[in-house]
Length: 248
Length: 269
Image (cartoon, rainbow over all chains, first blue to last red; front, side, top):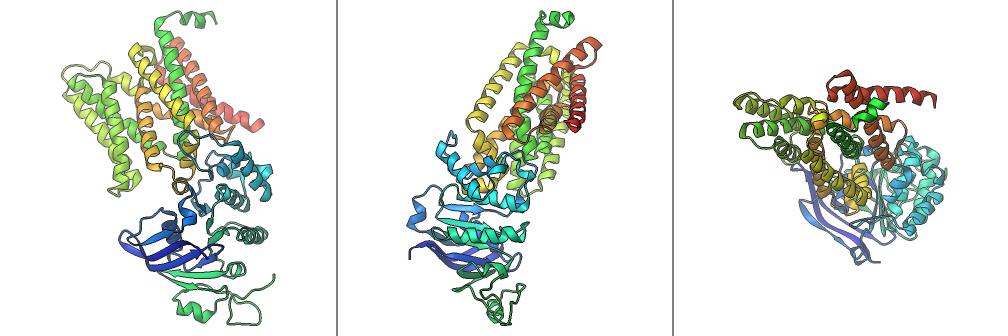
């Protein structure tokens, strides 16, 4: 398997206070990595470092050859709470903003077609002329997923796509991600540990340091060993295996 | 009606009409950006800081608009610098530049020997006294703004909507931000003669608020605000002429009245 991203001894800080320390992580093709951890533990910081939005204090992030040659290899779905809901922009324009732009730019016919096709796949083509502020939480997340996918990324990074979303959409979203994962690698940050473990292949616990867990089943004891104080939901008859595969 | 048509025979009125057209387009475009991005307060800071430059020009005897441009651009950069590099809270750094500019302006005007006859027209505007050279500057600014926003509309829109995402897409976000800040500063200064320092924020926000009642699409917002700005300014101009009241105030009053009416209309449509 070819590595897409290789993080070595990464340390990131805000105002000289370290948020991440000596993090090592490798993301390979067709990985589906769930990132969990307490609030303020550095989950979003890790994503921002990978996206190049934050300059690391120490360490380096190396991208695989598959990502290097591409103009925009990483699809990104940020936390929706940072979005200005009153901004005068239509759904279709938001999706098109996922394209690669150089100099004087007009979206090409192919890009428009691709955007429409993505909207159809998400079942939201009918709302494409609406303003972003008129959407429900689930619709908004779908729009941002379309935007992230417009440039055909090899790696998709999602920061809490399950906020402001109803249960039905959450299920649909994860099924969609599972289908996408056949082609592209996914890094998913979530606070809903119980649900994501059904879909992810591996887990990273981030709380200043990072502990990589090469399976989607993680136990209470392991979490404690990783120094990862997160709220754990137990399922069914196996009280200590917190996140085993389960049917709804 | 004849009285209105007759007005267009006068040279001063033809100039005022052109000033209205230029002000409506530049304020319609730049104002839409300011409102969408919620940087009305920054624009207020830049506007008022430019008074320092007008004062300096009075004192040293050069073109007041040149002084205003100097101070407006300086304060626009200064606000960004204070916020990003010196890590002062943004609203505080705006207030610092806002008041510093005004204070310097007052000191310079006080130090200027003799009477400063045009001071009031910079503070409150007088569209009926706009000169040909000022019109040329306004025209050139309009060409630059229209070209920039037509050619790079998508980048401007996407950066304004989600700066972080635009960065991940590899857009030169900082370069765009500084460039647009400069355009905001120039727009403010060159429209000072129309409604004045104190009232310019209205041309940048009220037509946009009216337009925002009817559209949430950035492109349409720009076009509609320019139209509303033009209609409001023209009506205000006539009111000012026939009732013999200050033009800046008459224009603002008309714009607010128009917004009120459109808001009521919106209830029924």
